[in-house]
Image (cartoon, rainbow over all chains, first blue to last red; front, side):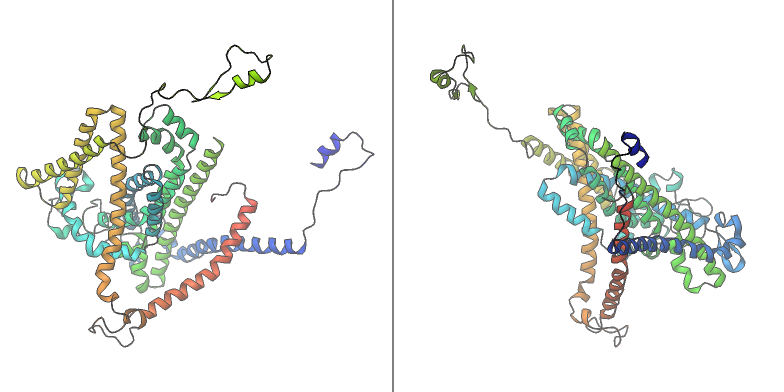
Length: 336
Length: 201
């Protein structure tokens, strides 16, 4: 920079450009030190969690090797353990939750940001934010004591009429269809519904936030060209809010993957891959850890740490991608 | 609706008479017919009747299917069938007066309202269910001020409480806040200062 300046100035012998370097005073130095160390601490804590998990998990991972990802049983005492079944259950529950929560969140976010009048809007925003604060154990209680008995007829109906779709079928060992209510309790479907209700307020508020930032000029342009309200939403609000939709979905997904207590309360844990989502029995990584850490041996604890590490990496990837997409889309909307 | 009178007088011709003739005057009343001001807010009357009619028809169709015509049972199925019939009949009714785009607009608006009602209804219901099931314990004041030290499993709800759990929760929250608030603020200040593109607003 200083070289460029001296080149521009023809009179080298005259007044020299003064140095712009500033010497920080003590308060500045202290502030910088404090804020840098705080930022460093936050990052260091995150790294320490990952490091601790990796160190403790290395014991079990060294024994299991690559089969840790492909084995379904979980008996660390006999050295056969793997997370194929629990990881499959985690992803099943999260997928069901997303299938239910994303359309609901999208519709509600559009309703709040585009359709209802201003006074109702403030009330609804407060209500949705309030709902995000409901503890997950309350959802778990509701899922066990109310939802389970009321959703079983629905699950029976789906398996009867849509049983030809493989994952809606409910069959016993010999492949015969079963319809008694006992086969439908504690399923991934019920857990998915409860998890969906837990993540939907977060998704709604992120999507609503991004919809309300769609530029006014384009909105009015669309309406002035004769568009209906739905036409305006389709051509202006949804394209500008795309980042918010993806980001909100993935933040909800991150929470759904890690959800523990509500899932523990509902599912009946099994250690085999269950493709029939309506059938009783599923599992998830966090439920496995919550249920087994109390009675685990030293080696079993290491195996649980390895499972936790996989979940940690999975949610980290999902959350990181989500925040990246949200940040990208926001800066794109500002420049465009 | 004002007209500036400036016919056959150029700008060169000035004086008191010219400025007097250039006055602004309003056109005579009655020359321009203006209709009643259109109401841009709210729902037109025929659309209200469409919604009501379609809702009644949807309920009737569902009841007919579930009670008499087919062996379908269960109130969840009844609600689903009623809702689908409502959507279909509403689309047909709307298409009598409006074009395809307007019908799509009405249907999508209905779907957004349905999503909102379903979601907020479910969330409020979760809370309400918990409160109603918990009410027998909540109405006893000892629930908030006593601990379970002297309460056994067979004691009535008027003995014992969750004071220990409340205090424990408060202690944990306080400790967490003491650690995270300074750390969070300082980290936010630091990352705001150095990163050009911060993800949070």
